[in-house]
Length: 487
Ligand code: DHB
Image (tube, rainbow, N blue to C red; front, side, top):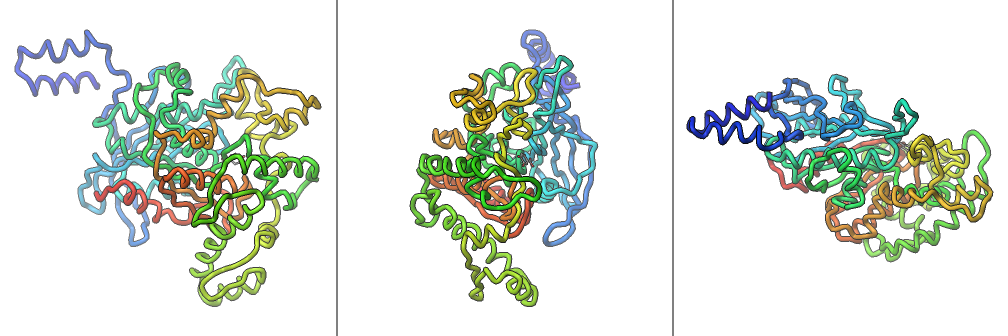
């Protein structure tokens, strides 16, 4: 199909004697480009998108399950879907230079297929996608391997760093096909939620780093840059090697609905956070100065939590606001601003979702233990703290392959290296009642980026839980602003 299209183009474009030089040499002397995107291989779909102003009728081209590596391990996951708007409310749209929203569906570090036939599930990712499409942008949904995949011989082939390698391969594929694939491949905005938010931040922070090369080569990934222009990271579950200490610093005093908490382990982890936070040497926003474990509660209150509560309360009807404030007397409302203390905020959040340790579980039962499995070993420890406590050996060392893999999964590692190929535009969101991870994960990610001089739009959603997205329209407008795309 692809070759015929190329020959026809040749015949039409050049005189007959040139035919051999054009068509035959291309196909016979050079290997065909296995990773060429076929612009003609689409179906036409329609959908109605409810936008802030009105419903929009969008007609778009849908490219289903396009394999993005030459040597896939599993095509179901190593493929992507592309949606390209061609008509919005009866007006023709040219998306050939539009930004590309690269929106993954990864959750729980599990495998994620680009399922083209599947109807939207109405989730928050879909909201971003459909609004982006209705704004005239190209939407790409990459699948990726995940920690649950097991080969017949018992090998876990989707554990770290498979998912990030796949996302990089997808970006390389798009850039390799620049001009063939619709949209501007230099204006890719990577987004995802939770583990997907973590991986989009990682994709954007680790751009073009050589550590991944041998994994990409094994897959036959395109030889192109995997840098993206911007990242939108919703409740990223990341900085996994420091996530347990951060969690106990944040939610250590909050109760768990079921089961006892290991108070000693919680205290030790929380204490370890002090040195970790100091080692980051981060300056807080708006002249706050160094962010330390001591002042981090105040920092979160001032930078994120009070503004989130203020936005929430401002948007309420007078009577609703009065009821909320009557039920939450720990909030001082000055007419246009909410004020409160960190300990009162923590008490308001209440139950924590996870036990101690939250990520590197002593019994190897967490998703992250599985993420750092290898070969036929399903789950491993990835922090010396849990490894030593679980084995009772105070001198135990992580498996020798782990330090590199742990770094390859952590955007903070690349930000500490000041990776200059990173994305410079960031949208970061989390709900204030999200106890899947510490709020410092977002605080440190945003502060690291701002300290490097990047453009960071970071905010929290008041009283919102894990996976929330309350300003999708603002996000889509932000894409237009940072990419400078006016349609
Ligand atoms: C996700 C949630 C978690 O609590 C976690 O530890 C890892 C991933 C998720 O929703 O993707």
